[in-house]
Length: 382
Ligand SMILES: Cc1ncc(COP(=O)(O)O)c(C=O)c1O
Image (cartoon, rainbow, N blue to C red; front, side):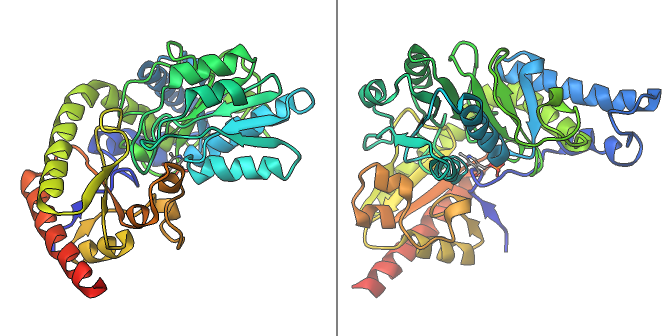
């Protein structure tokens, strides 16, 4: 059976050019980049080339890019690092209830260590309430962390407006851009972003590599103490092959983003139209326009999203009910609940996320399978 992969928000395959880029650094150019002999030069240069490529993708300066093991580490570092740095003067963390658990659980950790955590409410589309931001962010706030785009419903936030409010009160602004980086245009300086987290495996690099952008002049504490790598802020011998890989993926993303987004959004819109027309009681979740080009989150009334996911899997179709990390929990999505969706709609949600090259015939096949599955599940339920 052929696999039809409609879960690019969970992860993406490493691109061929990316795999080629990383290969020399395993066995030929294996030197420790910190070595003082000439042999280390090539590894060091690979790291700096990657930093420049990521800087170009994000509108940053190369020295503002710090490599991490992925998005979770970058989120932890940004928020804990800011909280620790401001420890005595600012005791509040502001975030939203729709963040990934890498942010939510970090905020909980800080709550257990005496910080106050406040959550900015979102509307029915998952957009942060800017008026509430004006009221909640204050001079006691160390860091405001609001995701760039949501991993379940794809809604893109008004990042510039929120960062302005954070800065008015002297707070740092961090954004978890794990779903957005490499997929939509980001300019950290134009958007007033102090820190940004990203993860390579969401845009064509392997799993286990990411980065934190930290604006020049912004001070936060280290998360990993030890050697002097990454400007003395993130210790540990650099993962050179993976660093080379994420840089190449960033270069590919910058080159291909515009054309790919037109292709992907076109196919996504076509899929949504077919589903909403063909299956009664189906409804799109998230913002109708301000959303990631790849995301379609659709609720099917009267069925459980998780059952739909399991049954689609029997036809070789890969989709998610919630985010990949939350899919083992029994509750309905915390994102859809925070958006105020009723229980039945939240329970029936399925996330379809598309990559470049997905075929129309696969989308037709998926819609046919969905029609059959939803009908059967509704029969079983009644
Ligand atoms: C929005 C968001 N933040 C953080 C993460 C965690 O990233 P990583 O898997 O690289 O740790 C994910 C992964 O799904 C995500 O979607």
